[in-house]
Length: 407
Image 1: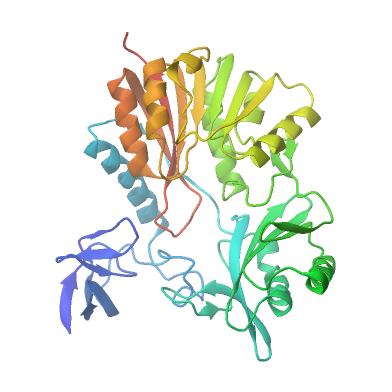
Image 2 (image 1 turned 120 degrees about the vertical axis):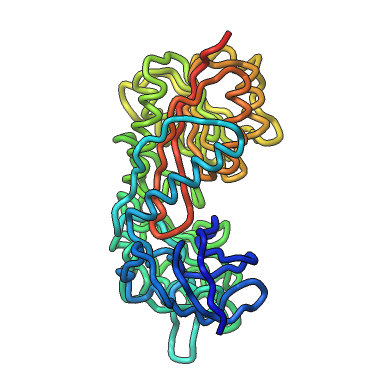
């Protein structure tokens, strides 16, 4: 076998050797051997390990596809994820101060999607193996809050009831104050007796809400989420931050950036992660592409006490960004777009020159592109904080503070 020196990690977490050749579960500086197949190294053997290599804490790491980087030390990952952001900004000619990374603790992920399939003897449920459709049964998980791991028997029961032998179900489970909020994709068409059977499964496992496809099978209790003490019932499939710990960090950073602002616009507002807490001190206009999420946010605001005015608007911000003329009446903005970023909306923000912008991003590359646009329009990128709520994955999030400095 040939030897390869790993020079760096790629953005998907694989080690990169000359070629480029990609080697999973390797680290910079390691000397490894393996068989090259389509630019990927198979049957990797570590000849000279990195000082940053550690024993994976989870016994399922080598087989389960849920984590890519448990072989790396926490210190290495914290530095690597911060560097990813710095390098993305540098590529766009943008410099800033990097705040310390905020890392969510183990067993804090409040949402997971299990795969579940019927078998001859019942059903199997777990996560897919790496680069495979094989389902790995897991007895423990260092990512998930314990209540989600307890949902594996529920996923098996749903597979027995609703899946065919030919296909797997996707069983998404979210922790809520009222219990598990469950959404099922795939499986048989929901008809008469199956609907009754699924409702019985929800009863058996004390599920708060069970949704299959686009149909709510049963809501036994409203699956309430809290944003700094303000209660909201999100619609099925609604976006939530992956961990409560990261959500608190993001909310605190956004509040700091927008402190003293009286009129705030929240773009890509979701169900109110930022809009509702901000409304304790500011009037807020929340904009989001999902009408169901806007209704949930509005209902949460109406049921809470001592909040300032919150208005909502359903709007596709990719196709129809809020224009500069309409943005001009606000003195601050928070923007939390999907991975594609918010190129069109940032053009309007740049033209409007809103005094303060809190940007929350889940993609350093598109964030850096948008940051360049704002900086060129006269904003200073005052600081960025990396936020790691997807431990042992290559995924990196951030908060960023922009403020107008030039006239």
